[in-house]
Length: 499
Image (tube, rainbow, N blue to C red; front, side, top):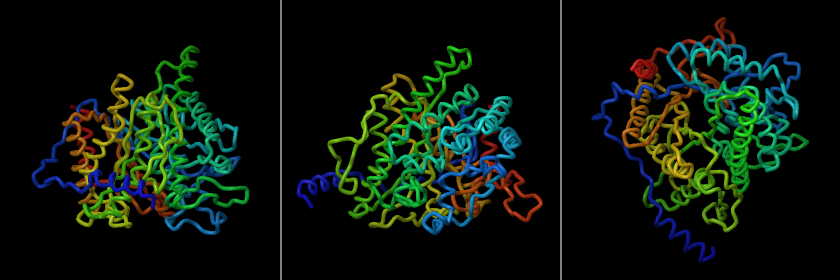
């Protein structure tokens, strides 16, 4: 190894603080009666693929995206190892969407998070399906009628197959296709949407495509995947392109607003942001390999986004993402100006043990093998996102940028016991952050109902149970859960609404 690089690395590591789990004395903390400001927003959400399913007997038969490619045995001969169940009809949400707005209203939630399907709106390149647009408009109109605010996601982990065949997010020139889609959706929906999220967890999506192989970013004309796992450079390129796309969409929708306002069509300026996920990684103080892994993880998933959206410069790294290069991957001075709000997605944290990634053994496990119950982590994640994005962007723009917890939830092993523990402690963590001066404006739990969790129907996150048994006469029936955790959450919501 080059001595200069080694010296820089060792110096950097010695100055790097070591993350270690900090546990609060929960036996001394009262979480029974939490209260939030009357204007605090509570909601629940889902994404189009996990909720809607494909349209049956559609004339184009092209409700097909790169997740379906991953399910397809014709792509490289086998499905991904994580796929236990195929998505299929999901929650039959496409057919039940209007009725499901009632589910949000019935439990006093005032925010409904959803996403719009790119592959349904543009089933073919340059061909718009007006029926799909009309479907979403009807849902939005009903939400508005009930006084429910909609956080609409433009991208949630799927791309149309035609986009994937063009190289997807591996090619910067393809950004224009997503911008065209965003323009089309905004022109159709207009003032009906409360908040627009360009991307859900872009670093997570890039990681699934280039680090874990859980998504397909690009295929060639022979239906062969042209990317590989553990491709740091590919991941950096894709994440950079997603960040650039956010800036382009922000500018495009603001431009569309001005045009429509002048034509008398829109009166409310679109509020646009991005949903950033945080997965904390920690190490023991003497674990050198773990510390290197933690540094590399930060420079893969987090630091480039923080730098780009606060300075306009997207950094480039080499040597396993440990050394910063002099030439950035991209620059766009508009980046710090491209936020009207910021969303935080947070579930848990993990630990490096040498080169291995593990759960912390003293924490309660959930149905998701990567997540444990660690409510302190939500507080620390709020501190991080406030320090790294919200505060500097607010200073640059000269105005306060609202912060929302836009995704957080539990698929509990012990639903009666663990869901109650979860909601009490994670909501307490938000209250503590607010008391420390972090202006959190709302909380959106994942998810409104049990849905398709990227390869499995066995993980149950929802406030409502869904009957997925294909042999049941009540298939897809929604039933509000009665466990103590769900009831606790809904009581907090109700008390906030009536305060």
